Length: 97
Image 1 (cartoon, one colour):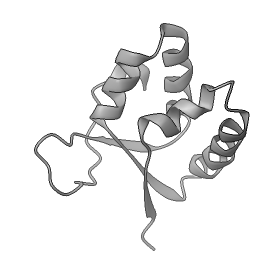
Image 2 (image 1 turned 120 degrees about the horizontal axis):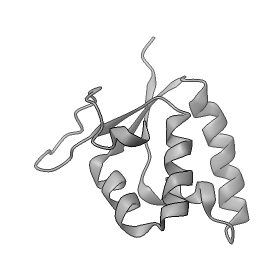
Image 3 (image 1 turned 90 degrees about the vertical axis):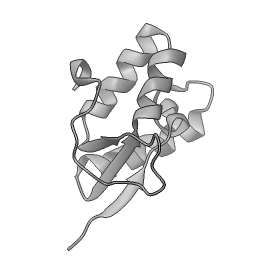
């Protein structure tokens, strides 16, 4: 049976460490529990990785990448792509995985 594909954007991942947004943070923890079971194919784009690297302080970035290590996910490069290529290409942030 094919797994459902879930795309995570920067704000969704960011809610894992968003103290003022307690409700959203709790909802993401619930989703993360499901994602850890590998019942879904999780997709993030290289743009998301770049935004996390550029816009998060070092402490928050480390926390968020630790959460990403807990789930199976694919990183896709969307530059010049009109349709999402759901591949298992290695990520450009290998030092975190």
